[in-house]
Image (cartoon, rainbow, N blue to C red; front, side, top):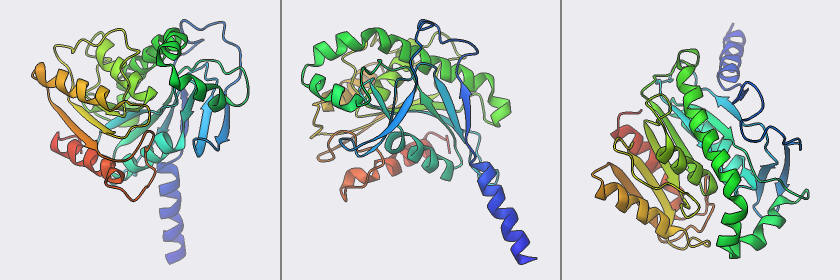
Amino acid sequence: MKNYSLLIIVFSIFFANAQNVIPLYPNKAPGSENWNWQEKEIFSKAFQTQVVYNVTQPTLTVYRPTNVIANGTAVIICPGGGFRTLSINNEGTEVAKWLNSKGITAFVLKYRLVKSETDNPVKELIPLLTNRKKLDSINAPVITLAINDGVAAIQYVRDHSSEFKIEKNRIGIIGFSAGAAVTAGSVFNYSNSSNRPDFAALIYVYVGALKNTTVPVDAPPLFIAAATDDSLGLASSSVKLYSDWLASGKSAELHMYSKGGHGFGMRKQNLPVDSWIERYGEWLHLNQFL
């Protein structure tokens, strides 16, 4: 009998966390209907993580908490990777599992990316990181599409809130690096209450490539985290967004760590920055999303 009960518990946990991949659009993604290359995934030695590239059909991968602790909150996760890759573990699935442990339903978003000309997208990206203007220019058309995917993801989750057993007024979004740009773009470009995030988190965000950075009248509360020694020099972007939210009388919380570099995500470095996710959890609790 004890073994039978244990088996039931194991299967309950398995099914609670079972992945469900959902196409974001019912047909071809608007604006990229002629894209016909194949999405791929590899392990990047340079990034030391699995990366996804050549995304043409955006999807949401659902990670559900157990029913015992589910609290009705949902968070859409946007991994980073320079709009060329998605750091799918360090800034995606590992974040989702942490959120699940807090009772939050998580959705990892694969948004559209610039086409890779080889099977080494990271090698293609690295030389462009030293020329931000050139990189922004090349990425610009896809950034618009990626932000559209972020807005559509919020709309999709809210439209299907009853199916996922989440509350329509407890839907947030978090992004890392380029994914944080998608997140910020979603915050700046929602059109109505149905695609507005209720809260947002920006982790080592870059806003230089965004066309619209006007703080909305009903801007959601922001959680922002980055490292001063960010190797891409993105610390100032976080400070600017925090200052813009304060100037507009909106709620924001900023954590700027002296060390941590760029792309720390869920990676442990035995530094204070490792605890950023715990600070995020405290912020969620403070804002009554836990």
